Each structure stands twice: as C-alpha cells, then as structure tokens.
Image (cartoon, rainbow, N blue to C red; front, side, top):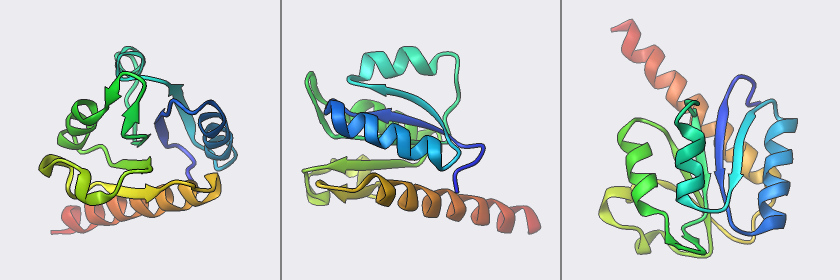
Length: 129
C-alpha cells in the first residue's frame, strides 16, 4: 500500500507511536521516527526527504503547528492523529487531514494511502496538460 513512501511519525504516546510505526512498515513504508517532539523530527529530516507526515498536534513540548506548516508549504501531506478537532487548527493548516483518537493503526495506513494516491493522480493530470 505504501511501498516506496517515507513517512515521518511524530507522536509522544509510546504505544501509539510503535503500533503506527509497525503498521506503516507492514504496508511497505520506510518510517522516519517515531519522534516525540519537533526538534527530534527536524534533526532526522536534515538527511531524509519524507513523502508524508503523521503527527499528533499536542506534544510534550507544545503544539507542532510550526513543523506541520513548513511541511505543508513544501507539498508534504500532513495527517494529524489527535484528540483535537479540525476547527482548532490554525488557518495555515485548515486543509490538513485529521483523524480523531482513538485510531487503529490500520486506519492510519489506509488514510495515508488514499492521500498519497490522490497526490500521484494530481501530478499525473498536471503532467498530461
């Protein structure tokens, strides 16, 4: 489902982070992380491009809006897996995908697959014009 994709995982809940990582790997993705804060994720991304990001909004050191905004500005799809509601996102992230916890890791894989497939289709259409 996610073969060839490199997925950044930022989640401070240890068990959800590990189960998400394993589900993504079983789906064929290379997993960057999991990371428990923005600084750790930024360091990891210095040497690695990511296809998409799965992020909790509220981490131990505060919300991760800055990194999510930067990723979205670079065309990297962001999937928030959080207890927060969409209306709580800042305007710069209003179009980000949101899944409300509790979430099954397999559902995260499915949503990412759909998001990335949609990106590839959009690029194929743009390239045909």
